Amino acid sequence: MALPTVLTPWGILALTSLAITAYVVQSYIVSYRRLRHIPGPPLACWSKLWTMRGTYRKTLHIDIAQACKDYGKIARIGPNDLITNDPSIIMRMSAARSPYRRSQWYAATAIDHGQNHIFSEIDEAKHTEHRKKMNYGYSGKENPELESTVDSCLNLFFKLIREKYTSGRGVDRQVDFARIAQYLGIDVVAAIALGEPYGFLEQDDDVHDYIKTQMALLPVFEVLGTFPYLDSIVRIPWISKHAMPKPTDNHGMGRIIGMAQKRVHDRFTNPSEKGKRDMLGSWIAHGLNEREAATDLVINIVAGSDTIVTALRTTVMYVITHPTVYTKLQHELSSCQATRPIIRESEAKSLPYLNAVIKECMRVHPPVTGFMTKLTPPEGDWLDGKFVPGGTNIMYAAWDFYKDPAVWGADVEVFRPERWIEASPEQRAVMDQTIGLIFGYGRYGCLGKYISELELYKSLAEIFLRYDIALVDPNKRWDSYNRNGFFFQSNMWVRISERE
Image 1 (tube, rainbow, N blue to C red):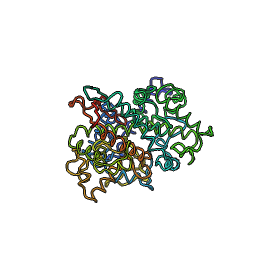
Image 2: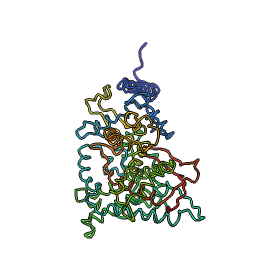
Image 3: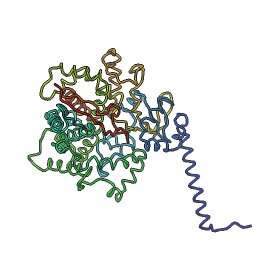
Image 4: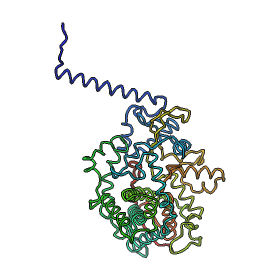
């Protein structure tokens, strides 16, 4: 019998479906075989469903930490994704002359599809050049007013507490410390970046619904973080036009972008604004153009405030729930002869127990758990005795990264600042180098490290020097969850009273 020379529409559809199915199956098999020698959760070896589940449950940072415990220093958590909790691997990937490069995960953090900021730039040469232009502005070397800017915001913070949230003498006032700490964090970075606070502390409110809008946008960035390749779809002009915040918006991220663009434009066009010695002035002096400067100001406010606020909240929570630590810290602060009315950064950093408390808090509760994904070089690499093919994503398992008994001792699960003081000089050097990875390493080190430490040390020293803080309900600490590598904390209800 002769075969038909023309397929029916149903026949074409059936063949097309069969071809697509075969292609998908083949792709899954090829993808699986590339990394089949590296163990991981079974579901993760075949698809992104394992990662999606952790994202949905808000437990992904815990899940990937557990994967390293179950499967080793390198574990597979996706068809082309590996996770590591080995400090030596993180330092190898980020070293100055490392052949590794930043992955598409970084590009998905862009807030302006026409201009990359320092974090979203994945072209290595452009990223390196960009960092050179911004480095001095972040270091404080060209901003003599940096510390006094932080002081002015701290004074607004203490004024707010004094006028609205101080208990004592028969007065019972309660405050969500998580909320006012976020107000402080945003106002500090805005004052440093824009030249004036955003107004959160002064108004004691979510100005222009910035926090509300940020929370609404979070699911979008979560999806892009899980599936970075979708970023190319969002970048399609007509989609980008409607999906991304705009400087003409009256609220949220768009409002921040508009303020940044106006501030930068004034600096470029107004003669009286030129030559100012602050962060923005340093960037401009070292070659950032107007659009670059505006975009980097925005990411500085968004990323800079969230991470430092988490560290501030966490340290306060751990101290007030550990009475022995609280007593020792207040005794050290009360005994020091600090500059008044606000302690100097150099004085705060010279206090051994305060140093130990801050480092221990960041160890047990790192403020950021983002993947910081890097790509193996085209020729691949040998890691932990295993060959990793070129083009493989390798991620950072931040949550359990700082709990290796070989580094921190057998009681790694215990919050105990004394470990930093008791350690031998050799052990302390290893501990310091490892905890320093919170701020990145090598050519990917965090530019904002100095500013973050400046704010954190001064804020915590003054808070515990000035106040006694207690949870309203000792059985309820806070609501805290992690999304897309950032912690969101609320309902940290406390009573604050002035110390004698």
